[in-house]
Image (cartoon, rainbow, N blue to C red; front, top):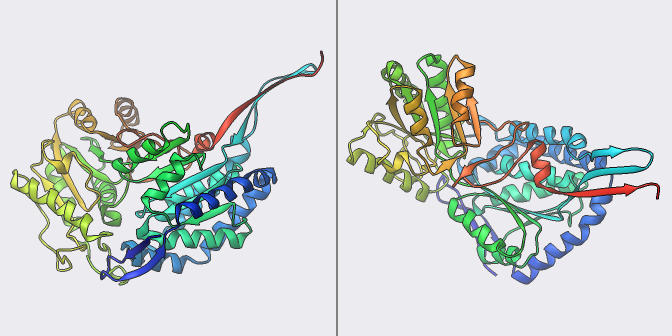
Amino acid sequence: MGKLSCVSPIDGAVIATRDTLSEADARDLAAAARAAQPAWAARPMDERIALVRKAVAIIGEQQDRMTRELALQMGRPIRYGGEFGGFNERASYMCDIAGTSLAPAVIEETDTVLRQIKRVPLGLVMVIAPWNYPYMTAINTIAPALIAGNTVMLKHAAQTILVGEHLAEAFHAAGVPEDVFVNVALDHDVTGALISGGCVDFVNFTGSVGGGRMMEQYAGGTFTSVATELGGKDPAYIRADADLDAAVDGVMDGAMFNSGQCCCGIERIYVAEPLFDAFVQKAVALVNQAKLGNPLDPETTMGPMASPRFARAVRAQIEAAVAAGAKAHIAPMAGDDGGAYLTPQILTGVTHDMDVMREESFGPVVGIMPVKDDEEAIRLMNDSQYGLSASIWTADAAAAEAIGDRLETGTVFMNRCDYLDPGLCWTGCKDTGRGAGLSVLGYHALTRPKSFHLKKKV
């Protein structure tokens, strides 16, 4: 039995330590959750929906706890008030569409025959959730999985281990049985043993590309479905007809919010040449207004990165880019301690030969390049191993759709970015992985089709 510890990025203090489960104990919990699944699925869907709504409401009553614990665990400033807005929006939407999403598809119904396709639960769903948006990423799968009649085993990142416990407390207090929603502390070996041993029926993993590959390797030969949302290097394109001020505000928020630690955060910006200088000037002025500091201070607008090692990786990308000819526009801020507290940075003079424009940064740095036209922008936006979202800023919706049709990405935004719409499928391509979260397709991913051909008269 090992231990998992959450080390606060605020000051390096250990704020939580938990014993990990042995493989035997983890297998027993998984077996119990699987055994509980038929009875849970037999309960009326409206009852399952009501319990999910009640759990969400309980979290809503505890937003102060959410906000403070997020600051302590991963550094998000308390001024932003936690994640309940998006958490509630996603869960509520999935509750609202459950009836139609899970309704049988009737192919033929007459006096003599009924042909239909039902959606039935998979069994035990394992959710492996990340630390950067720990409530919202987890609820994306937890809510529809439970509503569809699955049981859930949640394994949260060590950095946000308190979030898994908070969610379990809320769902159990709402009336969801403890063996229907199970929160666990697992090390990598035991996680792998559960998946490779066929102890779970579906795996939803959000994390690194390397982690996603491990999930697929664990599941190899078991026929267990694995959904992955992995790395990103999401681009924004500012066309010549864009509203410049709106583009600067929206794109730079998408690049810098949460200290840049967003799956769909903007990491590359391509600006039409006529707007380039003005865009850079306004972007630099905006970022220079950031107050880097302790996330427990209400005046702080940018907290530390979740770990000094994450900040080291971003610093290395910035230093390598500058050494290769890029220009850094933001002077070191007073709050930059050389550790987890990192000055946000804007780079120009960047090229796609630099890691900062090719490899995931997952931090508060963005490179900006001028482009001549749509064709150059499309080529550069597609020049990436990742494909989660892309953002186009323009007054021409038809042009945005035409450009979007040619982009290798999971989601196309026009005049917005860094947002997950629960009515649309959250998905990716290339090394960003494969999955289908939220929307009606999220329910399809968490169920299997079961066909009925009922001949009523012989």
